[in-house]
Each structure stands twice: as structure tokens, then as C-alpha cells.
Figure 1: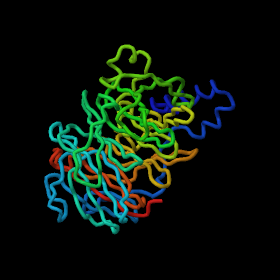
Figure 2: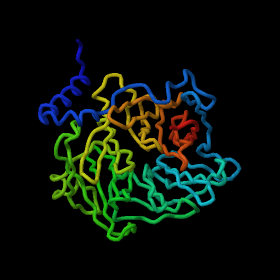
Figure 3: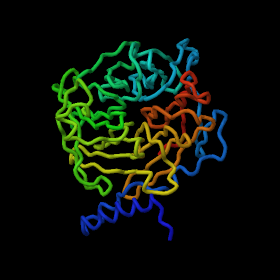
Figure 4: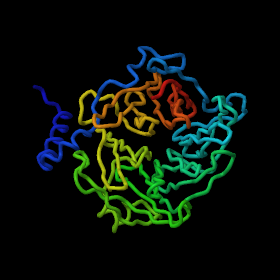
Length: 390
């Protein structure tokens, strides 16, 4: 039997954990990292639709906006390099989709407003005069946190329902921010850092839900996250610089290789690291940390270049690729996790998929191709996919 590197790593991780944990390990083994398998939505179509999207049966796509062009009949010019995004429900039955602009100059964020039937009813700028706005995250109180991804980057809080400038939230740290997720149960925020020496952070507001002041901490990993036996402890750090540059903090915390997407759902904080192509799950209530996907543990895995993430109504994790074959892949929940491709963009080989987010009713998935088919930031395309999401 041929044993390649991925199989060896997988067997080593699982076997070593089993020997160390004894019989009790096998209960945890049922939630081992996801392995390739059939998608609950079936296979993608053999050829793309008119918009260049390969989809499972029953799903359809539409293009909502293109960089440098007016959005529908709004007259608003869509930004270049669209990146992280989220959806927000409105009292009139409609919703808003926010989208960052990852330009090194003139970044910021914009929003698309939809009526209750899903038609575009408006488009406008919600953040200006910032740069390299990569991902971010929604808050339970209805604001969008836009993250700047460069060494002195900060987090900006924006009102997605109207044209606005946004407010800087310096207490959330100064580093190459990627994404942020809010845990309303524990009343904390979790943040990723896009750097090879990046840390995983949490922020505890002094007065929930105000983000003007609070305690910033970086994580230390103890145990084996592949075997599901790891836990996180936290070290207080200053908000004025990356934790890795603080000598008293760096030696007591753990580096995560290229932190990317981050999303909270049902008591779990999911995040990705692109340097090692991993998807992680942290349960704040117990402190547990586990790897739920690692492309080195399975040969022929469909998911590489892990990036932005979101979670559907059914608890499925949708992971966008930066690289690979430009897919959004699904990781199913439960004891037998499966990873499978859900959609693929054809002709976008010099781009990345960004900003996956579901409409409030869970029936529409939004995302962008940051550089479209041109490979240029001015070629960004923002999509909607609708269909029988479970």
C-alpha cells in the first residue's frame, strides 16, 4: 500500500492521539478533521453558466456589480478589489450586503441594499479614507467591522444602512487585521492577523457592546488541536502594535500562519490559516481548539487556499478559496465531517473568492471575485447564488 505524505500525517495525528488518550479518545475521533466526500447538494455542473459559475442542480447565479461600473440603476460606481462582506436584515423586509475594498489607497467599504424581493434598491459608500480593507465581520447590534490589512491596520465600525464614514476602534489592536467575529454569549470579539507570525486575538469590551475600550489578548495553544485535545489560554497585549513585536507577549503566545476568515456560529468561532491550509474551531465556553480541516491530511482534497468563511442555516461551513481552482467549498457539521466543492468560477484564475455571506433568510449566497477575469483589481465582480440551501 502506497502511503503518501498526507496519509502519513493524518495517520500520525490520529494514531498518536489515540495512543495518548486511550479508549476515551474514540468518542472524539468521530469528529476528526473533514475528509473529501460527496456534497449534500450533489456535483457541480460540468460547464459554467452564462456568468462563468459552475453550480449544483437547482441553483442559479446573477452578477450584481462590477468594479468601476454603476450598480443597476443606482448611479453608484462599485469599488475595485471587493473583499470581505456580510448581510444585515432591515425592518422593511429587505437587507444590506456590505463589501470591503482591498485597495492600498482609497479602500474603504460599500453596501448594496435589497428590497424584500431581492431586487437592488440602492448602493452607497459606508467607509472612506482607509486602506487595504480586507475582511471584517458583522456585529449583533447591526454594524459592520471593516479590517485594514497592513502592519498599522485598525478596525473601523460602520453603519451599513446609510452613507457614513465609520469610526475607528483602536482598542481592537494595531496589526495586519484580516477578520473579526463577535461572540454575543461570551461578550467578546475574536480577531485574525494575516501574517506568517500572526496571532489569534480576543477583545473583551470594558462596557458591552461599546468597542471604544477594553482588554486585548493573544492566544497560547496547549495540547494537540489535530486530536481535539488542545485548549487556548490568553495573554494580555498592548493594542498599539502586533503581539509578535511585543517581547513580553511573543514568547508566551502561539503564531498562526496567515490568519484569514473568522466567523461565529452556535457557540463556536471558526477561523482559517492560509499558510498551512487549515480550518480551526474554537469553543470559548470550554477553551477547546481543534483543527476541523487540514489539506495535508487527505490526498486529493478539493479545498486549498483557505480564506473567508461563513456558516449557513444548517450549520454547514462555506470556505472561499484564494487560489486553488477558485471554488467555494462546503464542510459539513457532525461527527463525520465531509469537505466538498459547492461552486466554481471559470476563467478567474488570477483572482480570489471573497466575502461569502448569506442573506438573512439563508436562501441567497453573496460573494465576489476580487479581480474577476482580468486579474486586475479594477475587474472585480460581485455575485449572488440562489437555490435550495438546506
